[in-house]
Image (cartoon, rainbow, N blue to C red; front, side):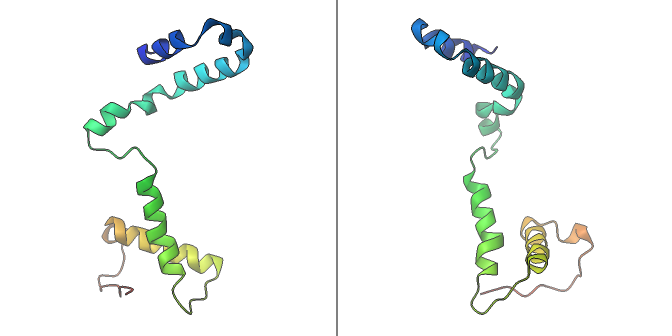
Length: 108
C-alpha cells in the first residue's frame, strides 16, 4: 500500500472501519491493482492529460458536430466509417493509413 493510501486510511475514524469491511477490502484491492495508472502528479509533470474533458471534447468534435449537420442521413455503418476516418485525419494518422493523398473537403 502506498504512502498516500496509508495516510488516508489513518484518517478514517476507527468506529467507521468495521462497518464496511467488504467495501474497504474492495477499495484496497482496486487501489493496489491500479496504482500504476494513478500516478497523476507524474503524468501532469510530463504534460499528459489526465481528465476526461479532452476525450469528451474529441467525441463531440468527431461525432456529434459532423453527424448532426442539417439534412444528414446516416446509417450506423456509415457513421462508424466516417467517425474512424475523421479521427484518423484529426489526429494526424491519416497518411500512415495509406489514405489518398488528395485533400479531404472540410465541413464548414
